[in-house]
Image (cartoon, rainbow, N blue to C red):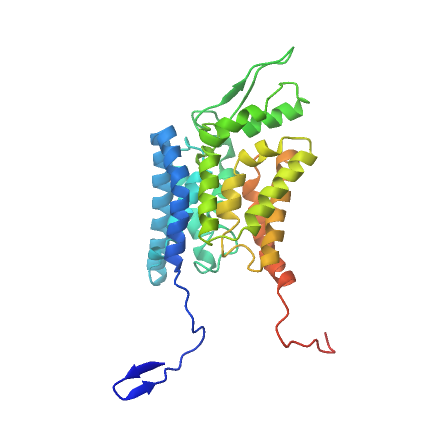
Amino acid sequence: MTKSSEGTRLSVASSPHIAAPTTCTNIMLWVVAALAPAAIWSMASIGWPAVQVFMLCIGSALATEAAWNAIAKKPQTLTDGSALVTGVLLAMCMPPMVPWWMSIAAGVIAIGLGKMIFGGLGWNLFNPALVGRAFVLMSWAGVLSKLPEKGWFQTLDVPAKGSLDAISGATRLAVAAADRAAAGGYRFDLAAQYEPLLWRNLQGSLGEVSAALLILGGLILLAKGIIDWRVPAGYIGTMGLLSWVFGSDPIFNVLAGGVLLGAFFMATDYVSSPMTKNGKLVFGIGCGVFNTVGRFFGPSPESTTFAILFMNGLAPLIDKMFTPRTFGWVKSDEE
């Protein structure tokens, strides 16, 4: 209803009639701001290799979206901030010493196959950054496994105990997995890993440098109401509980790997996760189950990527299961 010189005039428009003050761009910028402390600290700790990965992943993601829209003759969508978020998250999923062309390929695939081919923002079934990460992991696993010159920044060497040889691994998860395979023969102290995992872990992807800063970023998003607590609570809680059931340190298994990055910043993606409240909790629990099972019984101890992607595929079904009954709806005889 508006007022004019002639009095009150009615304006008729389709719903919704109440608009939220928060925009897509605003949400995306808050996500970037929440990721910024961990991202900046990773670049400060590792140096140019980390800076290069961030520049190439973000640049290729933005360029791919701009090029796709230009070729398809669609309006440019870079200002919504989603491509920027994808680029930052993708960089944080990557090892710091990857070849430059791999970072570019990951950005192109993340936006091209993970987002734009579905129709753009709001239509993608899977988290775009994880699509890019999965593509790199499956296509060039051999390159990533060459340590440290072709993939990881540093290796972790654990001295031998008794008659066993020394053990070396790219990440603390890899060393912990080898220790489990040796029935604890290396005496790898998981509790002693809390401090480096929280503050300065140089064995792992860029998003693993500081678990404490990821937690800080997650709490910021929760405080702003940008993400729902059910997804990270279900994810982290399930991961910790099942790790304890499987005889391992739950705190170590939550702090190590991509669990916190996945729980706070990827599994909470609006588009590829359920919309219903109960569905969000089930989704988070499912991510935690598949992540833990993959870590303890799969070929790789880092299974966050595929756990979330698998649950992304189930998100529509989960929402269908938990969609509340419409007010006034009556079940027909034919149903």
